[in-house]
Image (cartoon, rainbow, N blue to C red):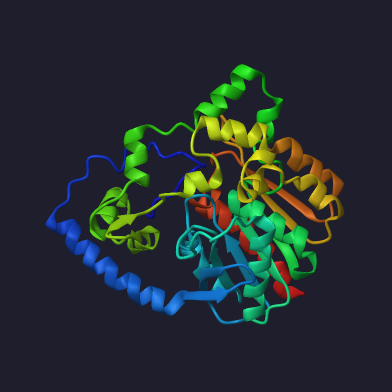
Length: 349
């Protein structure tokens, strides 16, 4: 099973430590490389947007029944690959987009914000001659989906927000006393050995693949190869993303949360977003999927309840007590049981 992160800097899993490089792993890498190249040739696309070029994966045929999926932090377009087939079977064209600095979408050459990304995403819709789509996203991707609705409400049929985008980013932080705030901020300090594992450089693509390979998962993990990038003669995965978020450590996170006007446009896009204001005049169906496993790292129930009470005709709010953040991997069957009926309603119209 492909590596996933349950929340922003949950990079402390021991699963990836202590794995030995051997001929069996290398043979699997070669098989996965061939599979990956074949898969990419069939499903990968690029579009030159208003501000930069976006990369994406797509499944199914061009249709007005389109779902745009926006992945979370430190993930990429393959995040939605396990679920695309079921949506294609009910008539959807599924497009999963690499947002700035992720997957095959490079870091922009200037400081772009969430509204700029919305502009680029609008161009992607135009490239498929899609007037309106269902926009969905997980975590950071859900905040990008909310920003798209704010900028282009007439291009949205419906919204799927998975543990993000419906409540202020780290809104619970501002309600805590100082000691608790410091505890929250300390979670952004990733140990050096873990930082090296995920943000360091390797001499070969295979070495990066081997570092990411999950021995407890499926034999084939070809999707990992989309995370690996060339940097001169070296190979990297997540390098640069934590700084791009402006959340590299507790000091950056404190600065972002307390003084967002002092950080990059991209960094403050998520911190300053006010979903309750954006959805004040909600006029499309909205499916909120909230992870509530305790202790909840991102408590959002209060804001989600307010949205539901304000717009009972539009909002469906579902809670997942067995998921800490990443519902679609932690509770994949329950996730699809919620998503499929919601999307099917648009096909009937």
